[in-house]
Length: 274
Image 1 (cartoon, rainbow, N blue to C red):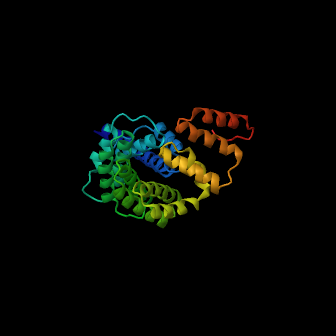
Image 2: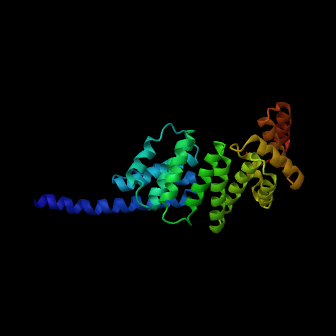
Image 3: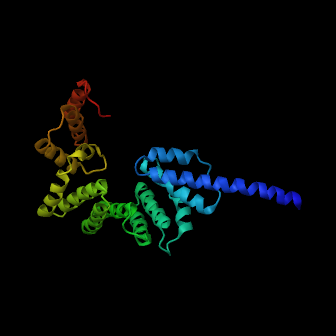
């Protein structure tokens, strides 16, 4: 018995230190997730998977979120489901809300919009505080899933909520992209006056113009419209103009024009875009 207690006393401090280290690294990965998802993922990969169910569930949430943000191939929701099963959906809790948000992101990667909408709605109900970044992101993601299903009115409701929350949080990136999707929805509904309001808000943020051009998730029509707007309202440096034009022409199937501008980009010694 003395030997048993001696061993137990030796093991407990090691277990406590290990648990504290896991919590510290999980917290570090969580803080990096939005600004540097690759670094967050490298921290998670370097960790030994936590043994306690509580820490392991949060680890699974962060790892699944990192996989989504780093565009990894996801073949099922079996991993993230272990986390949402653990957190449940009965009580408001930040980690439970982020778990369901992440489940929605996984469903989005799997192309399952119905299940993604279900998960994002669950997440919205579980946030104890709406003035947090992930709540605004949940509304944004929910809006894009409605938009993808051509449910434009529902999409605009969620995107408007997201933009309002993002503005309160001074989250200019989410606010900007919400405006962009609102513009697209208003265009689809034929609401020209409303879409012009969103367009004016978008054009006031010139620093994101390159991101619009290069984002493959946007509709072809949006890309082409914005490129025309860019030519008219922005003074783009030639070295960025060439690859952007090539990208638009390639997406429209105009291969000769795409080839011409890709060649121009390669010939330009100051071309800095990959």
